[in-house]
Length: 171
Image (cartoon, rainbow, N blue to C red; front, side, top):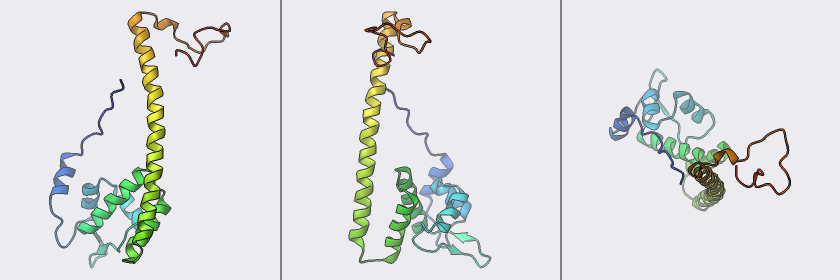
């Protein structure tokens, strides 16, 4: 059976930062990056690409200040992107949210369509995983039986017709 290694745990600093409340004046872009796991460059890109739902506050000197709502939204964007939603889809969703009440059905439709895409990708991945698991079982069985050297491998010579060592059979 295939063993899946868990995603590396968030750094202690990021976990602590997430638990620490965002002060009323907000946090710097560097702190926002630490709290969300998104690079400073990506945060700036999110703004330029129209992926944020409200303008990020600025200090009198023009430095960004991220509020709790900003950080929560950035996390939503990263989850949508990590599940394959195109930037244009995230932008469309952000525009709908930013527009306020009255378009909830459109938001729901967008999210349901994305969910269907994610489920289709998961089904494809499960199918691929079954093939990988089968190949692992073949290799484990052959190694245990001591005949792993009989597994198919590409060679210049063509195997005789009916041979059990064809590409689809064992290796």
